[in-house]
Length: 311
Image: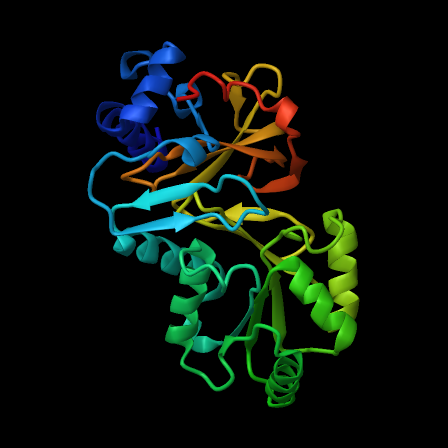
């Protein structure tokens, strides 16, 4: 048994005992710590519960992250310690990109910046603050200023990271196409109802052409998680060291495996005080080396196992 699995099994026992919502879900699936010998046997809580329940092991609350959403009920993640989140995303970023101080970090996040309790916004604000470089900051509708900043930094051969939501990156490069050699473009997904949804290949092709870069990087995270996964191209994600992605059978959600295609389940060891075992609404494919792809999303009618608790 490796260290990750040992920690996950211990966290399952803790959350089974201290998280009333998760305990009720486990009881309804008829699984207890006595039944679990591997992480594949742990019940994974559908993330829709974050819309209807307070998913927490404690009454302590440092912050409540809320999903951006496109209408309707939003997810709320009651976080007992912001230090846990900061430690998680800082280590995750360093694992894949090094220290933020090495970059000029620019963010194009409309739809998030208007929501002060978005977890992505919190992460980017922290990374930008640590970068402490000229031009680093948030650019809302200031496309001309962003264009001038990117052009200046690239001319000076300064390592630059532009983090943006998909629709805003597309809007920008359609109005201000540019050829960059020293800039990493990282999309965080989602059209947020602003533009027609595109498959990843089509989206990245447009962004590669618009920014003149060979690859588009991606960040995979969500309100219900405190860890992230990153892709440095072609949509192949690698999770940070505090995270593991598994696959559940679309017809038998309790059947979980480490490789194959189906619904994406996540073990997030940073979610110590909420729930570390999440069944997302994403469809994906996992490979033997721990990398994964996101292939799409379930329709609401396809999400099984989410109606065990409705109140």
